[in-house]
Length: 267
Image 1 (cartoon, helix red, strand yellow):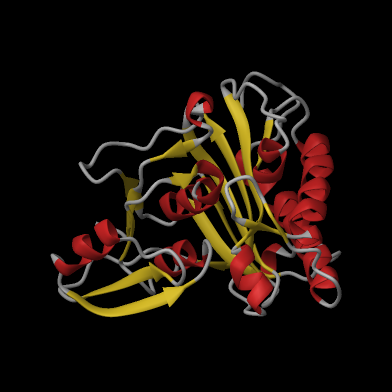
Image 2 (cartoon, one colour; image 1 turned 90 degrees about the vertical axis):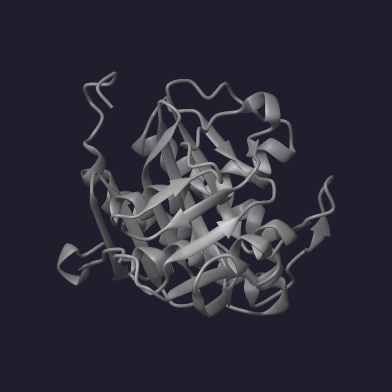
């Protein structure tokens, strides 16, 4: 963040970014009560008015908080608005878990990730259905209740940490996207329990020490992962490719997709 002397330190950004995510979450809940305006994108995945309107709230808010930092959002990319990532950039999924949202389940989130030099360094995940935010940066992670339009109260935040790996594992798995390679990976581990859940909530389970491993070995978009990656690392966990190498973000030539990952709790 040194390139802009007016830029706040990462931890100082967590509160304002959490508030912004909650504001976007409030708009999502507002739309959930009426016509969702659901349609299909070019890749046949669903999109709703909530996805679009939440992203615009995030775009405007982040332009104030982090002026000049490129904004790479799921719906913006779909429209062809694809800036050069640069050294620093934002990866945004305004409504992660659109299928769950359409189905009336509360397992959807607002994801905000800040990437520096190809690595997520700050992440915020807001769950509108529960009014809970998980966020982390610089080795510190927390969860806190936060309503749309409310001020973030540090005193209400609870520190969270990933747990050391036990002999028997709890695996977080996708409710809608459990691919064959991920399934095969899990069969080779001492998994005792599986928790199937939508969206980036799987990362929050690992960050809270409620799960130990989350594999997603199929292709996935960077904005689905960046916020959870930063949160998990801040909570003491780690993210890697199947062969153990580091994940790198900012692949504009690949439409911001990579081939998958394994998320782990603490060593």
